[in-house]
Length: 242
Image: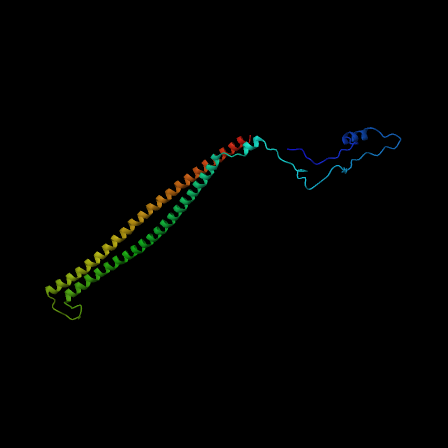
């Protein structure tokens, strides 16, 4: 640094205050009264000194540039690229995490809807099976009654049921039963398809969960590498400062 250009007045009677203090304590005063101690004035005005606002260098301390500091101030380009790559990788990891979370939420919602649908369809299947059993039981009972009494089910009057009419009635009953069984079979196939779809959704959800766990492990590994990179960067900066 440059020397200060502020003028400091020098008094001819300047002395060392420590020595004066010691001499005052050790040397006894004579019988004659001691002369007064000289005091330094706070400021002696010198007519030769002129303070002007046009002198910008007065009282200004300028830092001297050293080659060592200039070398330390220059940053290598490699850490800057590393920081940029780090921010880019962090952004990519955040985007991947958001996509995985969105896919996980969507798969979870689809799984819940599929489970609800399968539950409703299973309950409906049980109800249809019970209804079918009840209809078959009532149908067999009514057919036995009609055959034994020769009663017309429409008019309620007794008739002489011929073999053709009986066979026709049995064929219609069989056709109705077959239709009902076909509907039940179609329903069972739809339920199996829904079950297969649920299994597919479950497998996808497990794969997404596995991918998320893998992503978490990769993120932890990246954070460890990032910490090592920071330590290396700090060591490099310390070496440059030295």
